[in-house]
Length: 342
Image (cartoon, rainbow, N blue to C red):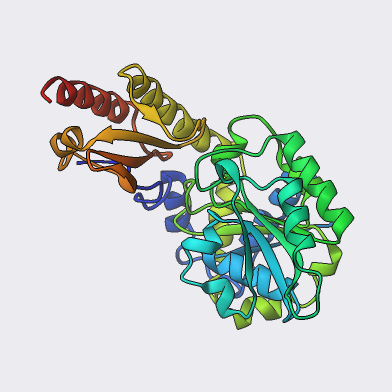
C-alpha cells in the first residue's frame, strides 16, 4: 500500500527519533522551561530575524488556532477567514466553541484578498453584529495554493489600516517556504502572529507559535494552560524543533515533499487529467474517472474531495518528507495502465 492520504502518517524524522532516545533519561524541567525548548526558541527567533518575538510550542494545529484566537479576541470580536479555511470546516466548530464567530468569505483558490477583507469589515459595523478583529489565513492554503509575497504585503497593509490582527496558520508552512517565494523574516514583518508547523513536516508532533505583536504577548501562557496546551513534558516538543531548525533540516524535508508532489503532478498531467488548483506544493488535487480509481483502489490511498459528476471524483494526493520518488513513479505507471484498461 502506497499512501498519499496525508503528510503525517510517519512518526518523525530519524534524527528526531535519535535525539528523543538520546535524551530519554536526561531529566528536564517541565512546562517548556527546559534547555531544549529554550534552544529551540532561540533558533526560531534567529530564523525569523525577530529577537523580540515570543515563541511557544503547542501540540497541534487546532489547539494552536483556538488558543491564539481565544486569547487575542474580546468576547464580541470575530475572525475573518476564507470559506475553505481550516478553522471553518475541519475543526469541529472549535473557534465557535470559544465564543468567537468565523466571518467567511468566498475566496478564489482559498485565498483572501484586501477587497474581501474590506467587504467583510464593512458588513459588520453595527453594535448588533460581531466586530471583526482578526484575519486568519493559511500558508499553504487548504487547496494547496500559495499567497505570494506581494499578496501577503497587501493583506498586511489592509489589516493594519483597518486595525485587524493578521494570523497565519503555518501547519504546512514548510511546503510553502520550500518554494522560495517568501521567507520567515517576511512573515515576522507582515504578521502579528504565525506558526511554524512541525506535525506535517517531520516532527512527531508540534507547532511553533511566533508572536510578534507585543499586544498579544501578555499572559499568553495562562491561555496556553487553560486550553490544555502547556505540557508537563514540554521538552519533548522543544527537542523536536531544536533538531528541525538546525542545518536547514526543516526546509530540506519540505523541499523533498514538494519535489515528489511535482513529479506526481507532471506525470498525471502528461496523461491529460485535470487539476482543480495549480499547486506547486505537496498537495495535488486531480479529477479522475471512477472506473480508473476502482483499479487503483487497494494499492494506493488518497482523500476524496468532491464528485463533479456521476463518473468522476476529485481526489487529493499528499506527499511527505518520507515519500520516496518511487511512490510517484508507481502511481503514474498504475494510472497509465488503469486508463488503458478502461
